[in-house]
Amino acid sequence: MSFKNKTVLITGASRGIGKAIALKLAAEGANIIIAAKSVEVNPRLDGTIYTAAKEIEAAGGNALPVQCDIRYEDQIQHTIEAGVKAFNGIDIIINNASAITLTNTENTTSKRFDLMHNINVRGTYLVTQLSIPYLKQSANPHILTLSPPINMSPKWLSAHIAYTMSKYNMTMMALAWAAEFKKNNIASNALWPVTTIATAAIQNILGGEMLMQCSRKPEILADAAYYILSQPSSTYTGQTLTDEEVLKATGITDFSHYAVNAQLPLQKDIFLD
Image (cartoon, rainbow, N blue to C red; front, side, top):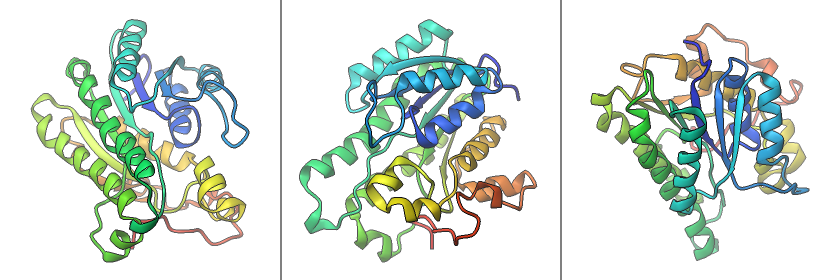
């Protein structure tokens, strides 16, 4: 499948995984709606919607940067309407934006609990809900949500239940949409990395430079997303996938070129035993 002139709405596309997916699809001429909050440079975070737009256009795509905080329905609606006006529709939704706080029950404030659920759960739900009328008009519509397989091990439930609930809710929505919209041939899948991914969250929040060095580059998820979104939406749906699993299906078995530092052992991502 060619992505030329296909329109893709990506939340959190100003940096990291979202931007990597955008650049991969832009290389084939896709239209990218960059839905993210950053409009000014933050020393701790790389890039804005405008710098991402320049990279996307340099890669060969068309970019529409729209400041959007997915906690607010009116901003989501504005983003979708602007994208449809610019590109005459929406073919793919990538639910990438997410908030993370890896704290236990006693140490999770109500503010952080609300932030994770308002972005990860409510925001993902509303972005998808408001996009459905346009996905129904697409020839090969896909919803791709960056969330993990649901693992009910006490290890993942006890360590950071607020974050775990929010991410598992994203996966449940992905599976629900696959069933709900199968009659419309709208695919819905979840995708998760086997290892940690070198992003600003890893650098500044979770583990610093050492964890960055033990991570893979975001391009591994971009390549996996590319394959998923290339598949027929009528049949390739209702799955919780890992990046390695997807790429192995394409014949790739050597993932060493994705490592930030191939000399160091990789750190397995959370939710995977």
